[in-house]
Length: 484
Ligand code: 5AD
Ligand code: SF4
Image 1 (cartoon, helix red, strand yellow):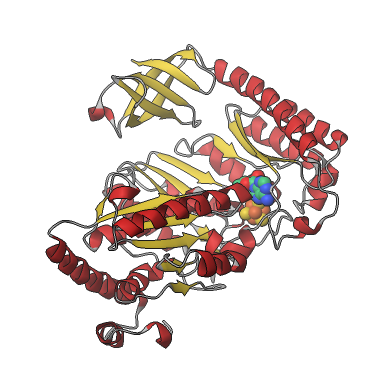
Image 2 (cartoon, rainbow, N blue to C red):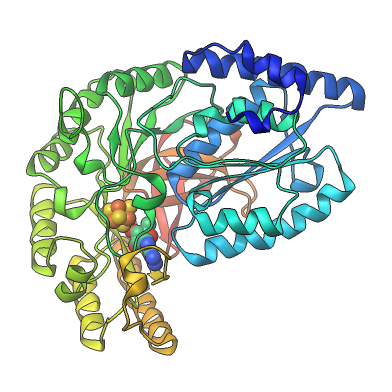
C-alpha cells in the first residue's frame, strides 16, 4: 500500500501491525474491517448491507464469491438491491464494448444513490479496471467511486477495504501482473451443491481480437495438490458437482515445478470419493489432447459436454485471429471426439464480423456449424478492443453486413440446437436439481449431464438432489419433464 493513501493515524497503526504472510495478513484485515463495520452498526443502529454485482464469465462469478465471503465475514449482510446497500461493488468484464458501457451507465445511478446515503462505499474491480483509459475516465468523471482494484490484487480485497473505510480519497490500486496465487480466503458459494474452482489464471494465446491476455495476464497454473485439497473440502461441505475454470484448461500444468497435463489432473480428480459430476471450461481446440478424450470417455463422472470455441469456420480468418488451427483440423478433432464419445454434447463460441470477414468466409462458418451440429452456440458480434492487434486492422466489416450475417447465423443455430435437443425427448436422464423455478409455480429446474435444462414439478426439498426425470416435451432451449 503506498504511503500517500495513509491519512488516518488509526489506519497507519493498523497497517504497521499487519502480519507479512499473505493469508494471515488478509485474515487480520478482515478482523479490522469487522471492528469498523461493527462500530458503524452501533452508530447507525442497524446492520450494514452489501451488494456484489458480477459481469462477464465464470471466473468473475468465482471472484465475486470470494468478495462476498470476505464482506460477510466482516459483518455485512446481502442487500436485496443497490438502493438498500451501504457497499456496492461491480466486478467488471471488458471482453466486449457493451459490457463497459453497461458499467458506466450504472455508475451514474450509483452516484445518485450515494447522495442519499453518504455511508455508501462504491467499489469497482475486474478486467475493465486493468485498462488505463478506463482508470483515467473513473478518476476524471466518477470521483465518488471510493475503491478501484484489478484482477491481480483481488486477494488484497480485505486490506483495500480497510484502507477505503478510513480514507476519504479515491483509492485506486491496479497491478500489471502477479506471480502470486492466494486462495485460502473465506468464500460464500452461490449454490451449496455445486462450485467453480480455478485451476489456472490468465492466458498466453493472444488471439488477435481478445483483450483477456492483457487484462488477466500470463498463464499461471495452481498446484494439483492445492486443487485436489480444495475439491475434497468442498465435497465434505456438500458439493457434488464442480466446474474446473481456466481460460485455456488444455494447457494446464505447463509452467509448474512438476509439470502435469490437464488429462492427468482430471484423472486424479475423478478419484475423489463423493464427487459425482466434473465439468470444465474453456478448451482451446489447438491444445485438446487424445489423452483428454480418453479420460473423458472412460470416466462416468466427467460430464459428456465439451465447450470448444471455434470462433470462425474460415481458415483464412482463423489465421488472422491467431487461433492456430484450420477449419479442417477443427472438423477432424470433432470427428475424433464424436467417435470416442458418441453421446457428447458440443457447444461453441462464434464471432461474426471479424475484420476482413467476407461473405465466403461467413459461408464457411455456416458450413462448419451445419457439419458439427452443436447443442448450443454463443454468437458474438465482433467488438473492437483497444490494444489488441485486430483493433488496428483496416478492413472492419460494415455494420449492416455484420448484423445481416449475425441474424442469419442465429436462425441456423436455432434450427440445429432445436433438432439436437428434440432427439432427447421421450428419454429419461439423471438431473441435478438446481433451483426453484421462478416462472412456473410448483416447478423446479434441473440440469442434465449434457448441460440441458429441464423444468418439472417439485419443491425446495429437492434442491441439490439427483433424480431421474423423463423429458416429456422439448421447448427449444429447455425441456418440460416428470420425475420418475
Ligand atoms: N469481440 C467479440 N467477441 C469476443 N470474444 C472475445 N473477444 C471478443 C471480441 N473482441 C468472444 C469469443 C470468446 C468469448 C468468451 O468471447 O468468442 O470465446
Ligand atoms: Fe482470449 Fe484466445 Fe485466450 Fe480465449 S484463448 S482468453 S479467446 S486470447
